[in-house]
Image 1 (cartoon, rainbow, N blue to C red):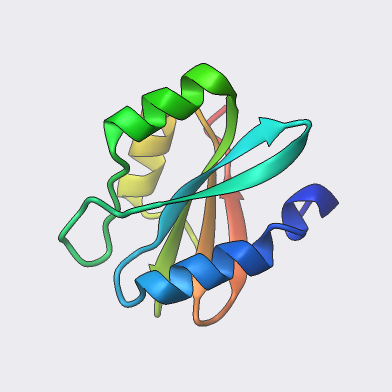
Image 2 (image 1 turned 180 degrees about the vertical axis):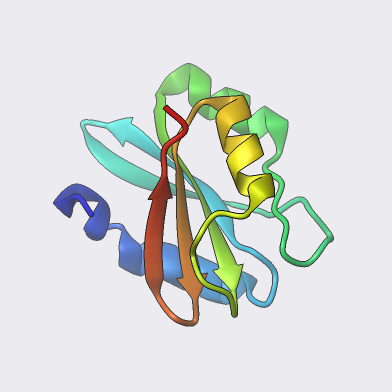
Length: 110
């Protein structure tokens, strides 16, 4: 994983720990250095996440979204078929982290 992303991992894991057992989610945006934006998971379903569309549009208008971040609680960090489909639909790589295992996987639809 790129060094500039690795430095964001403690903040990401702190956020997903607070969200557990639900999936935590957020965005990594480009502001000279990448920055993690923690967001509320709008989904009430276990093993799913939904980002508020207004938040997504807001950040896409003020900065470049580098990654959509979400966690897999008590699962590995490999993308599900649902993840792959949605990732391809938005055209932005997913950074998937497993918690509490603390592993990472980047799924790039391109």
